[in-house]
Length: 96
Image (cartoon, rainbow, N blue to C red):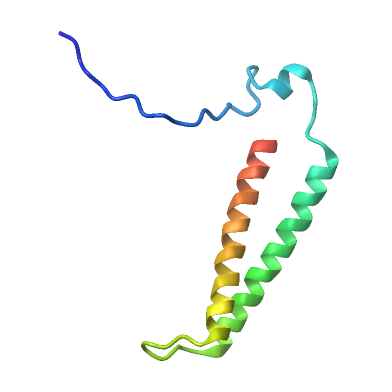
């Protein structure tokens, strides 16, 4: 009796550090410049996220049905910084 199943397209993520990893096979290491850029970007995103949170907390609660320009801008900065931190974490894990 045959069982039907669905094959969905997906991205293949190599197992970092495993023998099939191309950089592991070649014996190469990630470039130092990439690590420096990652570190600086992480610090900048973390400072921007912290500054946005402090600014939002100091503004107090927003009125119902109305969002001012500064609140929207600080909220957008906090969200963008959080997404950037997440993406840099994935980049760091992939570089390991």
